Image (cartoon, rainbow, N blue to C red):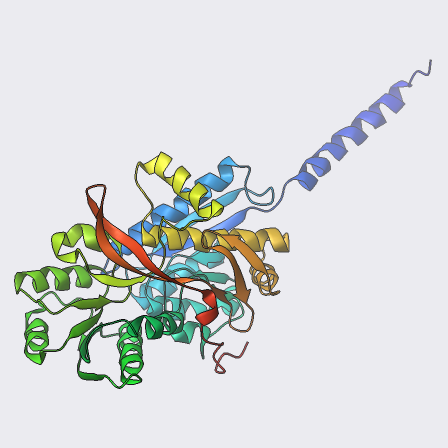
Length: 395
């Protein structure tokens, strides 16, 4: 039997000790560092709160399953205060602190501001709520991935939906910023293309509390229906005051069938139609699993905002898996390789020409289900009706 001399034993022990840290280090992967930029205050605070809840849930769920590609997910948060200046400041701080896989803003104005700085910050951004066509148009960025419907996708669906909308004259009321104008102007084009008329278009400053002058104009217009594209607390104020002032003209809504709005307004919302960004009723295995685990934790269904936010961070996670890296450019480049992803919307493709996730789209209506009002899908439109990428997008 071979016996080691004292010096040999010492050298062998030192070799083993020196090797252990290297072995351990080789097994540790860089964490997935998520920078959550969303509204904890301001006009988008309700939506922001739901986004934050869904992202936290997704991070906890991922870590409970061992992380993403064997990597722990870490998260840091910042309040964008519902305005672009604050959004830029907190996004930059998060990115420079290493949390450079960004997600969470609600309004397009903040998403556009974040997008314009990604290269400078060495960051990537996952847009899960903002709809402006500029994000995937003339302001598109290779490091920015949109996982929700764009205005153009919504309007393609609305062109089809409009064929079944009764009436020949319409009014529009939109929030006076990028998204509100895009929405109202797109609806006007859609119905005018059918020979119908829009004699009244109103734009309301963000943060308006008294909608009575606008409601008076809408009542005087005597139109067949009104297209509404309002946001957050403003949408709630409008709907409550529309009920108070007995506005009986049918309403058509864009991105306004959010659960928190319906809960705040109540009965007046019943029967109101509009587009839906997400529904817990979507019939596919991935969504059923999400709804089941979410309900087990919160004892309720996920809202439309929560569903879209959850989908956004799942796409981020898929990018990490595909890239086998957490570097922002690696993650977005991996996703841009014409991939098909298994999502809570089913199997969907990411279009590399403008980094837009191609999703089916939905029209729903507020109904009473199990004693509670919530949006219910009435019509489903395939992703194939989405318009082609904007020629203005140059990456």
